[in-house]
Image (cartoon, rainbow, N blue to C red; front, side, top):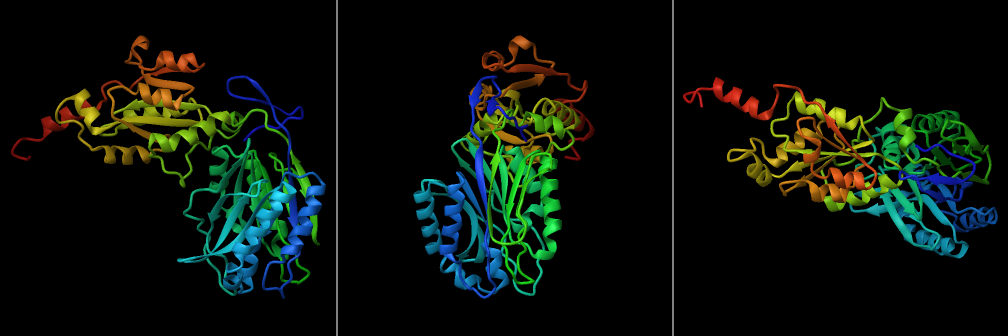
Length: 439
């Protein structure tokens, strides 16, 4: 993730300079008593007032879902969640502060931990259903949610939110980092005996992703209750703020990022895979908001295109080389009708669905966009890659979209192809080895 600087200037990928302010986030380490079977809303209001008096922009609450799950009061509390959210929205609007946290939510499939993001105007910007919370006396495997990652964006700040044990899944934090979040916020509830362990995990996640990680825990005087020790960790794994036991409110300033995204690619070159939670095949309309967000955060988008009919080693080497030129490889793939017009009758051998599935299995491919035209010019114009890649068999003057990419400061790269290896050649060899009688 970004390097952080003192002069509060962000330099975007085109070199322009944009002023950015610090983001002030308050950690609300609440006291939760075992004898209570509902959330003390008035207590949250008091803590919010303290946080706002310190000039915070956002307040992070602990994982209240997990607390009531361990007490066996999830169903009772889930019925009060709507009222709780209404109160939080009201206070967010009155105090002009954003609120991130978790409450239990009742759904047809059961009761789930639900992360929420309320903006400073008092509007719920998003909710995220996590995994079912713990049950008293029972253990469950940590599998993570099948839902898309919770990425909440407000003005120029993007938060990734995790619930309690989800920070143990490194690929979730990595997925958030690659998506361009400015910080990862953990709404947590861990016991007194695991506090040191959790702080170690949080520092690891911050350092390995070069990103700020903020985690707030609850506190209880009960021996087997939550033990506090909320923490804010910097991108080098350094502790910025650490709370001890007791109810407390601390505000941490997150400095404005300077270079968004490019440094993480060079800092972690050995980890360059698209997170498994994301679908690689999208429509153009679905992909454009994602690509725009990544470009704003300095990600280098690489584009190439082809039919990719009967995927072979030459394709793989070519795509791996293309991926090494940036942070994200977008592959435009011809539809079946388009391939037939270009290659002639009998092609493609494999239908579009099968060709997409084969490309999706490659780590070097991040996003696949089908197009039905004879050339990918329209796709290139929409994607706006910083790097356009074609095979070295294409003369530079004949590469579609080359002038367009150069017009916005991008570059065109021609990659040598493996000689003697092509889909057409493979088809001919197969045809020569299989007699009509065998067919």
